[in-house]
Length: 208
Length: 185
Image 1: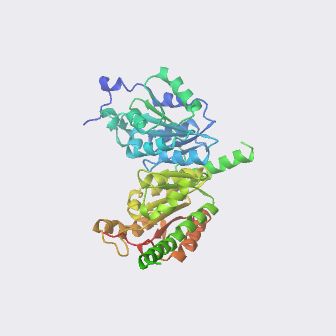
Image 2: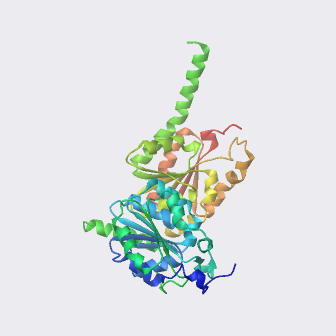
Image 3: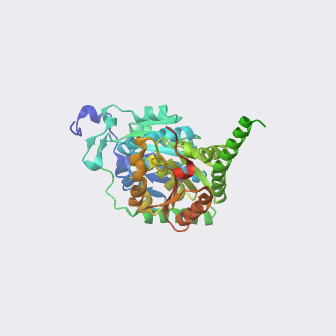
């Protein structure tokens, strides 16, 4: 099936621009730790924090984001962890929703930035724009707090959920199949690991 | 004591001796501050899994596929916690691409594999992955240490912990079928 960018029927469900919607959803980012899946969400999130150490963005290892988020959330129950992932990334490891649903870590939020396409490889349509509803899969996986965001009016509800839920959260945010911010981030995965840990250690020394 | 009862008690004593190293292994991991245990349910790791489930101070997480555990261990490490991934040899094949995260990020990483398709295996379905475990893991920069004897389990896993969490390596300890026995078919 051909890429469907520009099809009005299709675009009706995918109206948000991720370059605006991701920052609007997160709001003040300093209270969060971030994991971001490869491709689009890594650029969304690293540009949000200006390539700062509070975000670990993947450049490969597709499917790792949600479970990295779980390991980090369990290791740091004092911090709220947001794992961002695209629809393609989540589809590759959708069983992780079941693993997370069973444990229900109260400080983990999963945000799927769903553009219905594999943007990185040329905007081929993904399963989500062909009928698969990842929020329903999250619900069926036992994740207690879920939300689908399709319009700007729904963003504040999502921002509140990120901050106030005492259960794990899954947010599906539908966005247009357009590019993430053009942002040059640090791609070396070891450098990103070391600086992430150093920032946590600095915060601990400062009594944070 | 009747012959039958005597035989039964001997079997139980043998089973206890065989399982003893598994409890020692759990204690070793706990002494070394492992707080995240991730696994796909597996007969070979029954004791470790059950001990972690019964231990209120650790996270005991059942996975739907082993690759989830690779990512989870990386997340744990970012947060300053130690984790161990328990899997059967067949699970090694499920992990391969996500091990690029471990290798590229130079994450300390420890996994314990209960082997199938190994010494005395009778199920032909287990053979290909049994043969592939070491070359596949080594190709992804995971160093493999085999254990054949109960008395070697604690020393080898101790060495693996040092290599991983001080030496910065990714290490797999292969609990072979000489150690855990071959499943009867």
